[in-house]
Length: 283
Ligand code: C2E
Ligand code: MG
Ligand code: MG
Ligand code: MG
Image (cartoon, rainbow, N blue to C red; front, side, top):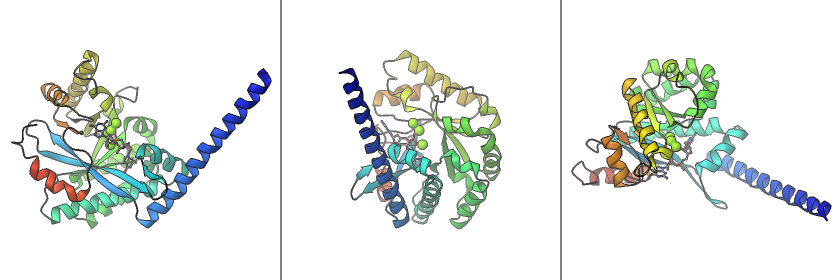
């Protein structure tokens, strides 16, 4: 009996594995098509100064709706793109599209100070990233300080030695580097001394229970203090409620981002949001 159960378990396990593999392969090939056919989209989420609610910048976030698969979340397809080698082409597309969009906003008189792009640190193994960024800034007539690259703390830690010279070259140009999901990398902070970081993004897991959890409040306070001591701006992620907004502002956090202020939106919707969220609007 035990033997039969064991065999059934094995069969079930193999079936599940096959289904998962199938799903990954479907996503991978659909993603390849979407990228080359121009079916990917960027949405943009405002980063807001907490003192006056002015726009500090926007973060570009990939959106993909496949005809068969429906909407696929970046948390699902980015890891697949990383494994199958599509990520560099994907990041390159995002980087150029974000620069082109910022230039288009400026052209139209829409005052967006900065665009942030998420990059997989894998890109920094290639030694041409800084040159590529330089060409894009030139092509779209952007100042380097108008571009921020967000890299997750975990990826930054894993790749720090290889990434350092590229990050330094970008820093010399004036491009900003932001540490995404700060506080989730479980490691020493010494990399902050060695890498040219401009911004820390306080992970949303610390923000979620800010009203009720004294530990989360203490940790957020600590991150804000680190930012102040090292002269880095701190951006709180995932702000969804008035209470979270008020706690962060009272802790001295300067910039925040989250559904409370705005969801990620199509580029065409941003001017309208900016017009409605003027500083005198009571949040
Ligand atoms: P991230 O860079 O930390 O982005 C923040 C995520 O939190 C986004 O999810 C955003 O939509 C979501 N978010 C924003 N405000 C709130 C809020 O108030 N509450 C909650 N619960 N969530 C909020 P999204 O767009 O699904 O992206 C997930 C992750 O996928 C991103 O995390 C980033 O690591 C990655 N990603 C997204 N776009 C790109 C891209 O173009 N390139 C690369 N390499 N990675 C990307
Ligand atoms: Mg990000
Ligand atoms: Mg983040
Ligand atoms: Mg995060």
